[in-house]
Length: 454
Image (cartoon, rainbow, N blue to C red; front, side, top):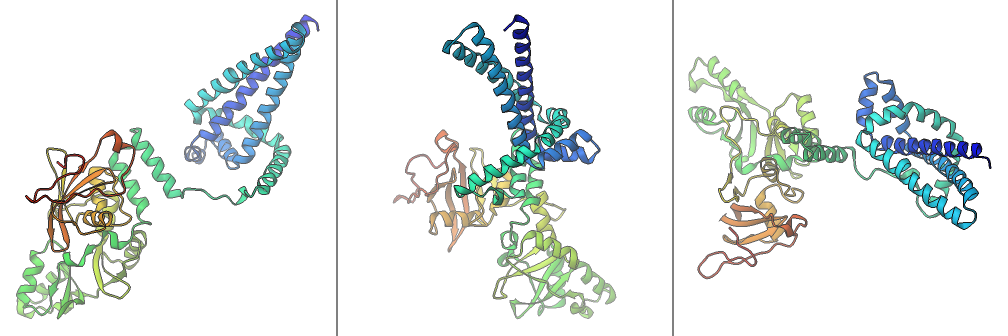
């Protein structure tokens, strides 16, 4: 081999290494780029983004074309390098030396360097190579199609049918994960994250999880005197109040403060002449298993803002309003008659005193905690579920990286708790599921089993 031929082969080797770097960087950029970003840019008229969107529609075909091209140039470069080295170093030593040199060159300059550059700016890199890759995918289409057929047939022989593979996560779960990731990276504020997650959660939350329980509903007995009814409506901080007759389960309607004011006006302000039934609207009942998304849609269709929640037997379980559902998205909506979230009292020592009827969702949203709400709605319900008993005052339980001390109990209801986040290294990476319980000592003072209860 003449010197001129050797120089030409070395030049071809370096060109092939650059082509290999192009394939490697393209693979990383096109698989790491945000499809949502590319789709948005394409909708705004960016032609290069449109090329990327078209390429990523069929990732299997794209990856097949890239791997085919990359392996072709790498093998050809290695073969040429071996032929050049063997001319100078005959035998196995030349082959070993050529293999070592090409491995270093391919790994450093054709793999690591282009992929590092692509992962740093995947969107820009993807739009840069998108046009070229469309032609390469088109040229390799017959070969990649044959490769897909062979690969799928081989996988089916082992019992894996990739054509029926479904996404592990739903679209909502993927969005939640993306929002949480952006929040951790500081690109999305907590308030914005909570709003987006609240909207995504509407399809998963049922009315029974956010409704006002029947024992907390303000109701008015229609058999009371007209003056007492009007006084009760005026004293309430709600504009819509259920009316019952004989017993609270016999709801005859819902009175709106504005409708009552209109009837008082028609009666010339004479309370005794007010016909309350003209101000009463028919009650609107919904099942407790209805999701918030379904109920929000029903409120819009029926032009209602207030619904009574019933169980499968028709018994009243609670009530829900349009505001309750909207608050699941945007947080507490307070007016001049509302009070901030009640029952949550942070303490100077880092603990939090919480009323038992506070919902887990409100607690998580306010304090940015991650307590599970699948098995219980209120924090008292969570403690009872985990403890598998109704605790006594003074008992302490540890689970989900929090310590719960029972501060108050009325009959079988936990009325208040003290919650302490456990931030020790051992608890930061694992979640204790089995509650640690402590019994009171003879002096009626709670004792702990392993660490101070605060």
